[in-house]
Image 1 (tube, rainbow, N blue to C red):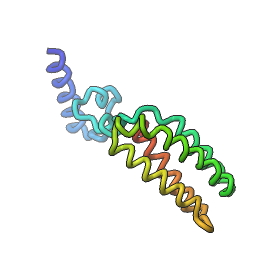
Image 2: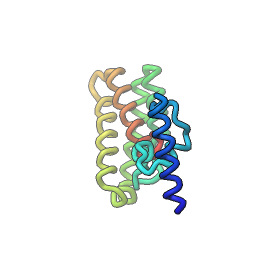
Image 3: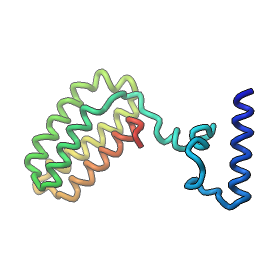
Length: 143
């Protein structure tokens, strides 16, 4: 019964917004999106079953700061900590969500490769680390 009332209210609010020309999501109250049974925001922020990636993310953020300061040698050393801790956690993480684990692993490999080039490019290192952070945030349900 409650669901029918909520759905009716949503339909009424949507119809009113369309009729008055305020159909944009910018004008819709936040509670409307929260109640919507088909919420793209909820689908986009669904967390991976990998669990908490924050300890890995901290290392990526530290590495990014070193790259931003153009300390690529320091960044190369710091990202080794990510490689080691990620590999040590593989047995616990991979069985939870193998496909997600492989995506993050590939992104880590890309960042490692960029920093380990003979003449690493600061721009390429920034991009691979930014991509890795974005992926970790998606996997954590933050984006």
